[in-house]
Image (cartoon, rainbow, N blue to C red; front, top):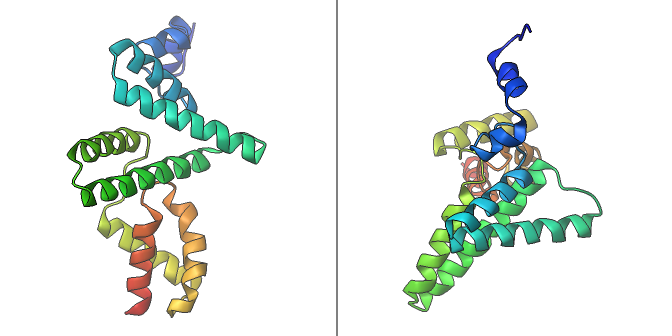
Length: 175
């Protein structure tokens, strides 16, 4: 047998299911990763991770039923960002009520959810991306913010929150 690269050789010897069992998930999409993580959390009795993964899977299923088709990877990332935002709001409410137990629970849920997002942009990278999009859209004032955000959101693809992007766009258009 002549294999062009070692990856093909590995897949020829070991079935994909066998590799997944040992944590090889290079080709898993987000939904498959969630299912694998749910199984792992159940085996390791990690209640927080199990609860968060079940909650995300449920939210995905609800969104797919509402849409009528399967969600794309970008829509899945947006859904996870929405869940993180919900947890951050719950955390701020818990801080106002001085509920340390709820604060720590929200922190652990946020940390768990962030593992499903791609690497986040640094503030400098976000500024550079926003600057490029503003130049691309020929935006000059705050009234062009909608057009800038519309073309910026697909480029973010889960690497920064819309709130952070909006704040940077507003700053750059204002001054």
